[in-house]
Amino acid sequence: MEEQQPKTGKISFNYGLILGGISVIFGIMLYTQDMHTSQSPALMVIGIVMAAVVTFLGITAFKKANGGYLTLSEALKIGAGIALIAGIIGILYNFVLVNYIDPDAPSKIMDARLGPALMNGEITQEQFDLQKEQSIKFWWMGYPVILIINILIGLALGLVTGLILKKAKPAY
Image (cartoon, rainbow, N blue to C red; front, side):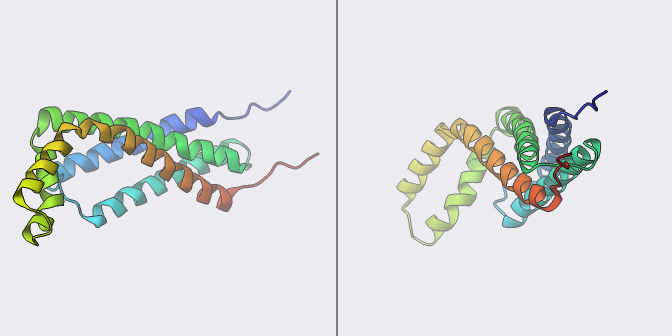
């Protein structure tokens, strides 16, 4: 009787839900501290570290369920899958945030991004207003970009983790 191999999709889905849930909780925490519009690099690093830890745990769980064996392609699938599910959850949270919870969030974010350029005289008030208006008008276009970037980060995390943890099944 042949041993049943675990499914990468199931692991990806479960750990993607975990990462998505953690990301939403982190986003709510930022919102309660009025930091949800912050452009701090530290917040981006925290997000990547959270993704790296959950991806590592997901790939490790698959390897354990697979009798201690892992191929690089399985690690890449799991990394991308976790990132895809977490990205969809994150986009849904952001959609709710900017459309219902804090409709001024896009305006606040654009103020934070463009404000320094205006203060330093790099752009005029008219340019500031035009860029802000156009950015808010096409805010929704950022959602597919967020998803693509999430998947690329997931692939990178899956690659690194896969290179560290890979172990081929013996040929016999």
